[in-house]
Image (tube, rainbow, N blue to C red):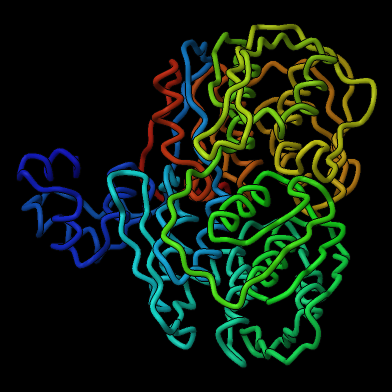
Amino acid sequence: MIREARLARGWSQQKLADELGTVQSAVHRIENGQQNLSLSMINRLAEALEMPLIQTATEGSVNFEIQGPTTLSGDIDVRTSKNAAMAILCASLLNHGRTVLRGIARIEEVDRISEVLTSIGVRLTWIGDNDLEIVRPARLTPETIDARAARRTRSILMLLGPLMHEFDQFLLPYAGGCDLGARTVHPHMSALSKMGLRVEATEGNYHAVVEETEGTMRSVTLIERGDTVTENAIMAAARTPGVTVLRNASGNYMVQDLCFYLEQLGVEIDGIGTTTLTIHGHDRLEADVEYDISEDPIEAMSLVTAGIVTKSEITVKRCPIEFLEVEFAILEEMGQQLELSAEYHSGNGKTRLVDVTVKPSELTAPLDKIHPMPFPGLNIDNLPFFAVICAMAGGQSVIYDWVYDNRAIHLKKLSDLGANVQLMDAHRLLIIGPTNWRAREIESPPALRPAVCLMLAAMAARGTTNLMDVYVINRGYEDLPQRLNKLGASINVFWGTPQNDS
């Protein structure tokens, strides 16, 4: 309704944003049902568009009405990596030149970190729908940081590495993100301390103090092979003159993308994709660069899972195969038919892609437990999809999530849609299939991948499922309901306050 009213007036999204006193990306989210609206915003929309019939009953959460069972068909492209985008957005602070990121996802998480960067003086300009120009000022202003936006994203931690080269000391708000239990920031502090950054927790903030270090050669061993830990250490090393050898590093997809971007800035990095990185840092980085973000292996697995759960034949195009090989090997052992095209390269010229055709298959439970490992093992963010896949398989499956405290608990909600899921402990699930999925109203969990698993299961369930309060899905996926609907799904976005089961 809002989009049609805007077009009827001949306005662009930017024009409406100007009338509302907001940014164009916010209008984009509103028109795609991805933005919670306050009463104030509803009134401003009504006034700007001369639409007095907008009613405040629409205030509340964004929800999905999902009709099932669904049979999908056709092709769908994998979009670019959210996690890579977040890392490179933070790394753009290292560059005193102009950065243009090509194909960046227009999602909540990107908007959050964009708000943070804008608040400290960075100029962000959207070029078309999915390209973003980034120009930093001569001096960043962390003292003006948007604390509310910062606290809603864990990516704020990745500002430690870039900002330590700008100031003797600075404050960052505590990091937020998904509700997945205790995720310590100690590995970040341990790594960055080797390069002169000391961080203390104060009331509501991290207080960072930069100290002088000696020598031009340093060796840093990470106490945890985490993705954001590795990215933070890489960014710190990129502008630390001399050579930094980083051991026990993650070689995961977002880390590789970050390295490819930094190489364009002139940083020499040896060992990309391995656990040992050698980084030749520079005191100043200044280059005008354009970088194509690579495709997201987690979204690829989401879309493959949609085909598996609905027993449909679909082709998922532009899958980064290097980061999906273990997942596909497990699927094939379970009896899932997958046809892979010849390989080709992503826009960055580095990442290997394939098109994957999913065939309707009868699955059997895997003989061993399914568990994640650091790259090149099964990706921790792809593990939840095996919960809903195993619910389709005959026999008993065990999902072991040793990384997060709460995610197995969130996946237990699959039982609300008919799956036989037993919580063995906070990290292990016993799943007995196959499942006869049933529709119902269900509250979305506050964790991205489990929420998407419920959405995919609902597509296979007979009847109407109302998945309530899906903000967390919109935080990590761009236009997912609309894209699945083009394959034959029936997902309607609606507004309203979740019902209280009590």
